[in-house]
Image 1 (cartoon, rainbow, N blue to C red):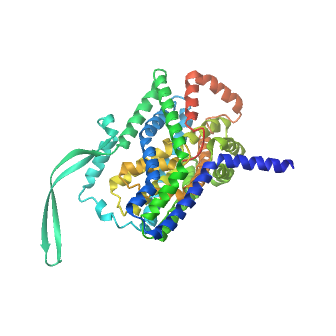
Image 2: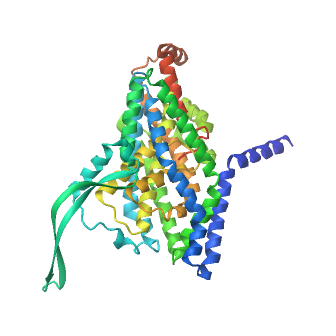
Image 3: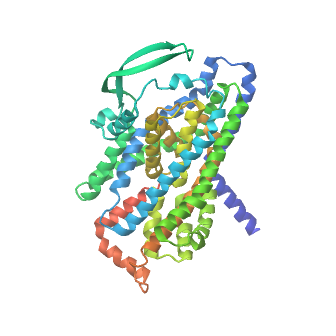
Length: 498
């Protein structure tokens, strides 16, 4: 009887913890049902607009939060790092994190470009021609990228971005042998111009520089750190409230997206291919990329006990979908493997704060999929800017429910990609969110293991970890203790993965 009561309490607790997920799944089902029922009635464009309108307002509200999210998250994340404390451990851990995220982004790009899951979307070819750039030199793609990375006016970067404007001389001649008209384009002059749209890359670089300067002069900038911490909390509170509207937005966005296309089967095929692309990427990253990176750092076997020992916390994260709730299990896994307590006490919270390489695969694949659904070809500049933003988002955007949608919307806005079909992603986002959370959990343990191996010679084999940790706490002092606590704040209280 007692076991039944315990099971009932656990089930109720699970329902309370996952009510938003369940409501969103219900929204996915209802959205598909509405699309199937309304499609035969041949709704007008105005009717489809009103069906999609709640979802449009939801996306507008999320996009409104993008700029404060980037500024507050990046500044607090960078400023919270103490460059003088635990420098060796922090350096190794951070290098592993950055490389893992970079490799995850590259893997996601390669798979999505190779599989092309968005190509079967029914409106993929409809707007392709209208989106192609008539003329753009490769050198100017990179020049514009760096101009936007290093903005000359941070205020202007909030609503304008730079691009190269051409004055062209176009001569058309008809070639009788080829039976076609040939165009000869000569560039008369080039100049730097500005177009509407936030330059998030420039804001990102400025925020990193701002946070780095704050971390160097910690005493004098403590007030600013408190300010941006408070700003971050406020923005996430707004987003948390907005995300409770996610079930309604899901119904609207899915129904509106499906009603705009002629072939729903093609959309489902595209969505299925997209899910397969992300799943393959997560599997390759977990069983090939991360182990190879571990071996490169340590020259040790990554599979036993490290990868095998990380499966349990990875499974916990897949089910619970909460970093805070499963941090104890991650620490226990590190202890079972035999890692030094000084290492995992420091690296695990740091990893949870910054490292979400599983999320990086989904984010970058989603952005490319959105472009493919509209038949938009990526330029070199778009590929680079999308990759940079995906890396930054995967490391700096804290975990709130379905925050990957915010990251995708941010990157798509930066790269000029269409957001019309983002609602379709909600149909599978809930499952992919759980799986990439599990991948993140496995990667946390592997990151900690790599640091532990590299630090083995630094720590004495006879050192008492508890005593050493107490001594380190005394040496850190109040200033560095505050820095470490601030770093831990980077994990959202909800703890849900990107």
